[in-house]
Length: 287
Ligand code: SAM
Image (cartoon, rainbow, N blue to C red; front, side, top):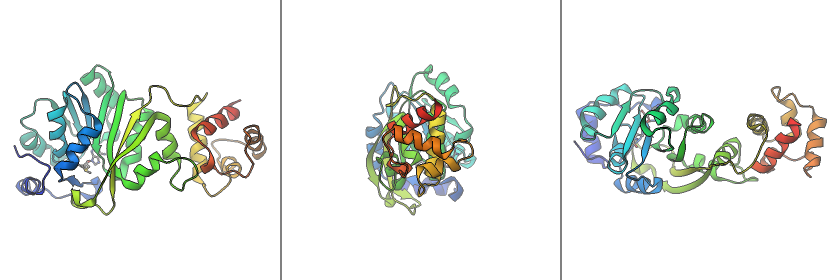
């Protein structure tokens, strides 16, 4: 079994199996041992942990996870990678399950139940960038029992998750992530650490799940409908973007009244509101 996390052994495996990278699956494999060790430290992977890895690729990070965790579940969409994982790179580990499926179609709650008795797991992944947001939102909205999510993502996306109101990167993703978890960018990762090199810079972000959301809201779904509508037309005032959203069925006057009651001008834009203010606005609308 080859130890991965360096260019030589990665190339050897790719050649042995005549593997061609699939762009559509966002395949950029890590080839830097230092970054891999730092991801394990950032994720705080311990011997008692059950870890879900999304997209193991040829099993590079999976080897590090198997060495450090009790149990690893790795979900990989590309069937061409499965023999590499099973017969080669992960063959000497007995604490890993390899599932050949699309992560967006997997019942993760059932995996957590089976592998960890329903207790919170850690998610650690070098994500396929084309589906970063649906993966994260799926984990949160399906209420998967989670301690933390430590993931490699595109640098701008990591920044979007962490920013506060009033900045250009602030949006629906920032608010959704910050409702469920405390985000912290752990490290920047240059394109040279991957094979093939991506065209974007990357960063590892850790989302530590809150036991209880930092704000109270009567109707979570309504709040997120309002947030989505607010940022769908982010150059417009909140009054205009919310009244244009058919799904919300709100008239301008009602929104102006709610904003006034919250001490905000009718000209305010969604990007100026904090999570707490969106929660308050949703409660006004609900009433
Ligand atoms: N973990 C490996 C590493 O760090 O070298 C590979 C990371 S690569 C950025 C993303 C991986 O996710 C690829 O192996 C790709 O085939 C896989 N992938 C892409 N879409 C997926 C999906 N919908 N479900 C599961 N895996 C997926």
